[in-house]
Length: 281
Image (tube, rainbow, N blue to C red; front, side, top):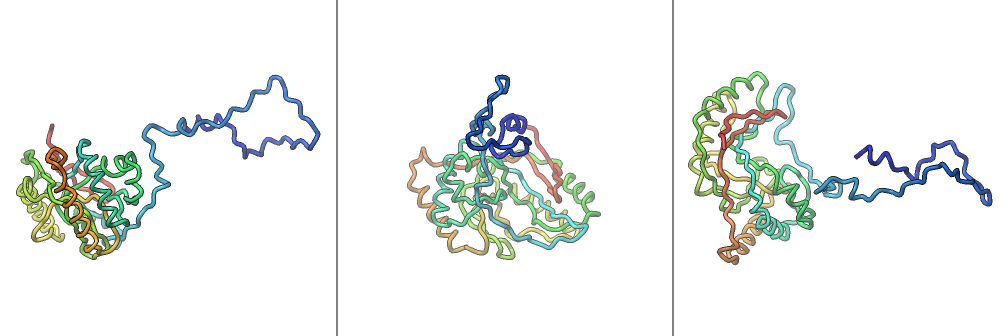
């Protein structure tokens, strides 16, 4: 792309060393001089499905715990990819949510949801097609000398896992421990809950043996799709009620139950990702 742009002259270039012609002083064109090309169409300089992220408002997150030299953020989770046939339904739900809570941001991407909802291509690419996660342990700080031991222990515990279905069947809101962020989420309350709860218990065992804080006493597995700064539980409760009302008004053929199959557990430490278990398709 840079090479393509370099082939086109810029109107602002003024380093050619040629003095400007004065009024009435004609500068004859050489018959051999190449004609200047017009500026290229913008579409030609942009790849297919291009999204200009610079035009989308971003939110700023607050660090959950202070940075300490030699410590790294640890997160164990199940990666979740939302099937593309669910995107249209979820896009409608996101539009309902943002009409109640306009200051929502796309999870992880941190772009304003209200702006994404105005462009389905941006919403699909920035939010709905991304990888989500079901947390199996708290996001905590781990010391560098503990990493090798923890990874080995987790892999040992998860070596005999089998595939199972997860139904994300309930819209819910959550607030983090220090009330700096609120989340709009899809919770697993039936199919898959038992299996995820067992996996959380295995991660808790590994955490406990490494002196790390365990997960919540009554875990509620979920994926989060949007977030907002602070504790805005009242607004998100209203948004959840509006979503439920909207879904109850849909016909049977319009309703969509988000179901995904478990196949993978990941441990992310700092910027490095470790596969704990990965089942073949």
